[in-house]
Length: 424
Image (cartoon, rainbow, N blue to C red; front, side, top):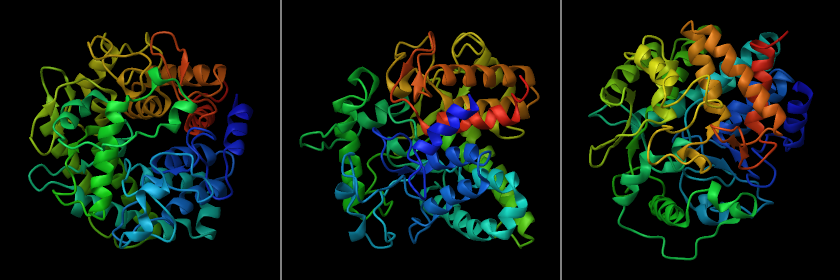
């Protein structure tokens, strides 16, 4: 299986970075590259460093790491470089990018890549290059996206969460009054069935919100952001990456730019305002209306990544119970198996994803639930290897959905094979 996973990453390599999949996703995606680097470090730590260096080179002046860095030779994705027109936006880099961001898993990935070959990393001064970039990225979240009222960062588009059409976004999208009002380009449907993708109605809102943000030069003002939601997974990954920044600063022997562990603690404390005792999980909150989005999703489980999180035992019970069915469902569903909004094949409304399964393996292992972590890792590797490394799968049957030969699926399989499943 390791050789097959390696072949996927070799096939999807584009000289300086890896595309998520050759047809459906022909550019560089932000949090994808961080997950991909975690797997690449077992093949070539230097290539893993290049993966992250490539993304960091597209950083905006304000510190944001863009959701997508576009290949100028490709125009078969929507919304693409022609939509974003980033070259017209002050502070954008010299390469075409989207103006949105994605979850901040990059510092964690950077630390893991360094630890794969510290000698080579130090020789190439990888951390010296990465640390100021990562600090600027986190400062962007702290100064531009964090609410003074809640202490949490908001996403200004569903795409920024990485979990595009989660039920979390249903009500906030309904509250967005505008419409894109044009033909909705859907090149994604050339590579995946419409039953597996967000609907045209959702895409209309997606494009309207993106265009509104673009036309305001991506300035994060209230006027530019008719959608603003606090997501538990996004903030949990921010806190987890702050802990990684503390280790990186110590490795470099430098005075930290600020108190990284303190900021991680502050985010963890702030996450408690998203706890829903009735549902037994963390939920999202519309930062415009202040309404919580009362759904059980895999995002609400991911604060398990944080040491000392306030409701870890309750989250583990929820994960093992009938709503997520750990050990009985295939991997971990993205949405509550018992909810009326559950859909086993449509994107983030039910299917199981390999990156969230990997994150929960990490969380369970850290919390001492090693048997559960190992079993989930075994399931992840088996389902991926037997189905050409799919984008996501049916949580009941394991039937593959989305595109195949998906890079983060292959990369995270490699990581688990090398760390947890070696010798199995």
